Picture 1 (cartoon, helix red, strand yellow):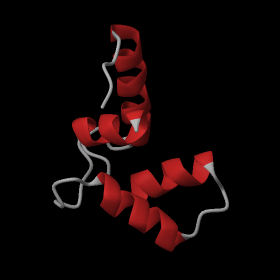
Picture 2 (cartoon, rainbow, N blue to C red):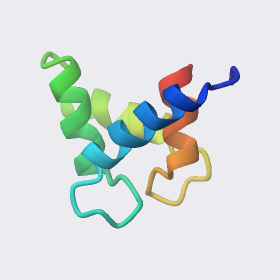
Picture 3 (tube, one colour):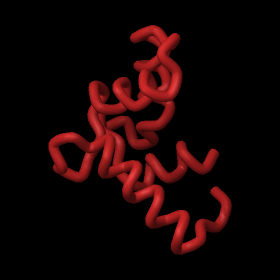
Picture 4 (tube, rainbow, N blue to C red):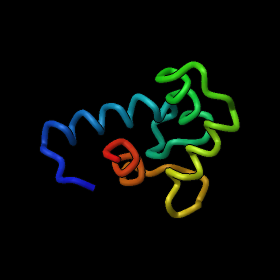
Length: 74
């Protein structure tokens, strides 16, 4: 992952928080799918699930802010 400026970090945090609908600090499959659908309405549920699995680096079924940053910056 490339270095992130303070302004970029703030923007990433806002994007993460916008996805985290229940504000629990984690992005669920449903929340991530909603984000992907808003970015590209042509994605299937299977494509969203695959993207989630690829982003969930530790395989715990949730996306942390760090995992989100890695995905967004990639």
